[in-house]
Length: 185
Figure (cartoon, rainbow, N blue to C red):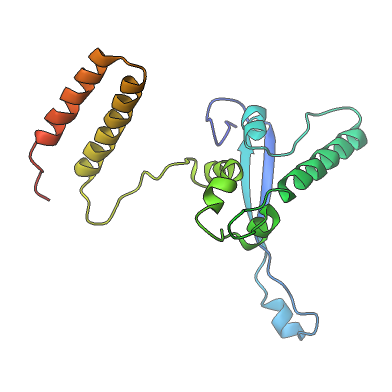
């Protein structure tokens, strides 16, 4: 089976995430308890390299499984301590709060928790940038805007690096693209 992330290497790390775990009221009668839906699971299979990049705790197969479990628990505890120290200076949200709520508190949180949000987005959406449609904007128009944005960034970099010839070429490309008439929707 190939890795779900890179789709190149053999999947050797198998992850089962509980996505929904219904809570049963201990005081419920038998009829109510029987109607409780089953827990929902999401399975993914990744290679060791992608698991390491996504910071999924795992250990390679060893002969001493007890030691492997102990090392994995120590690593998990170390990461939890490091993450609990991260706090947003604006709203005071901690990484633990973000993980429990699943929501960020303020716009600054996106910057503060960026190293932890990126792997999460990769795991969920297999991308860290939005590539979807924007209501009211034509696909070709969006691509043109994205291309212009990229050219403007390259132009700024060329000017900072004092590469004036390439900056002039980039400027001309930008001007020619901006001169093109808008396509009717």
